[in-house]
Length: 139
Image (tube, rainbow, N blue to C red; front, side, top):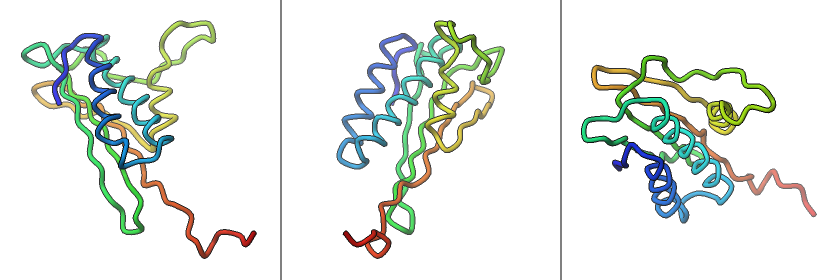
């Protein structure tokens, strides 16, 4: 999806992600995905240039694993910035600077890819596995 390079872009992306994945992932997983997507789009709007047309591109992909779990990848593409996304230390009383800490804490891994048009920041969530019935203690 394409959203404006504006604060409303994060809201539009969050709502669409929540609407499309609500029936496919658990509420806890969805909350993590929405939080990370909001941070990635917010960072793109605050710290990077837009893509041509004044937009940011947002994508997600679900992939089933062999054991029935769901892996999810989020990707936000913008026009790039001089200083790439880095986790930076922030003071306890700082009002910002914690976004990538949130991404790193909730996602299994994250990274940045650059090409001639800009950069993509991605976050991956490993499959969530449900408990196997044969391993659940008898009650």
